[in-house]
Length: 108
Image 1 (cartoon, rainbow, N blue to C red):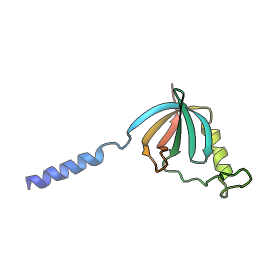
Image 2: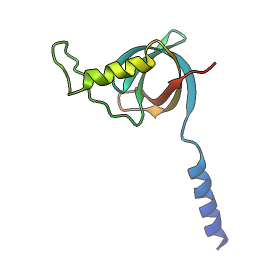
Image 3: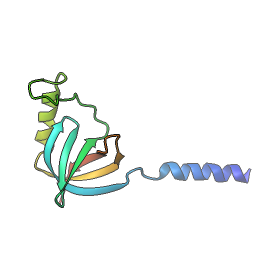
Image 4: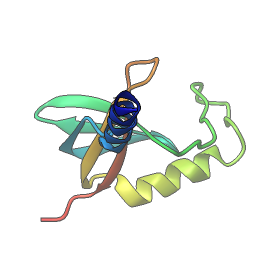
């Protein structure tokens, strides 16, 4: 009985630990598409894919339009984040070694 209580207590404590691994500040210098931005921090560029957003993909070729509404999604994200200082809440890396995270406007 005591062992069961210890296991349950451990599981509850483990589930309550925040999953965010770190937070940082940077300036958004480029918007790649509706869910990916390029940030510059201390002369280092970081590609951030936004967690929880699945925007249409833009084309890698100049003359192709990409998925429907991809340009609108890109422009909207640019209107919100481009050239702004943001806080990044990092959740790890994706399979392409991009930072998975959330961004929000930095408040001074």
